[in-house]
Length: 67
View 1 (tube, rainbow, N blue to C red):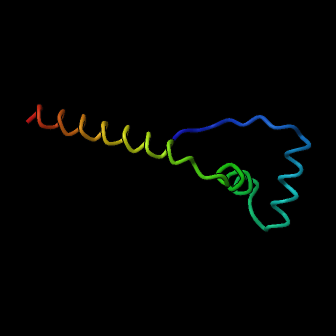
View 2 (view 1 turned 45 degrees about the vertical axis):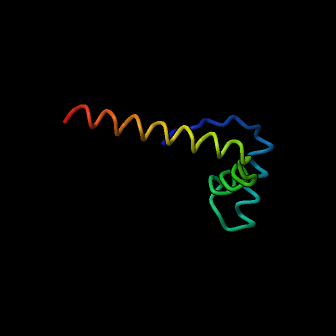
């Protein structure tokens, strides 16, 4: 898992805080839900799937070489 540092203004943080209170959530949950509100474009999903497939094939080939 990767860690992201997000720099936001004090004003925006307070807005997130008030939204968190309103929704009875943690500030991190509010920011996370807003960050992932928009789904990834289908081309991005396809590119990721291709990359993942290549990684799996590479892992399988490396595992076969070590046996």
